[in-house]
Length: 94
Image 1: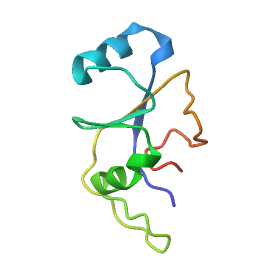
Image 2: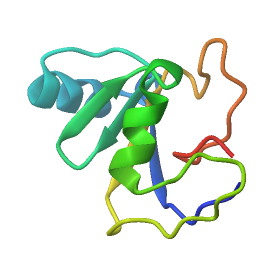
Image 3: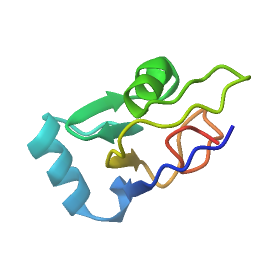
Image 4: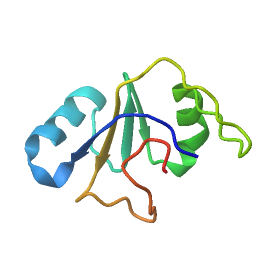
């Protein structure tokens, strides 16, 4: 199921600006991190339901739910990789 969600991707291996910003905003650096507005989710799979709810995504296979209000979504990775996760750079994992 595809959703039209814009994602800004940041790679912590590409300089200190991203890591400094993470420490300043959240007190640490860990990847993957999904940032939606002022909320941060450390890891994707274990937070999948909460992320979908926050973005207004209905995860049921029969649904093409309309999304909630647009949110700023950021994904922070280490070298562009998400360990154990073969997902694209979209917040919904498609």
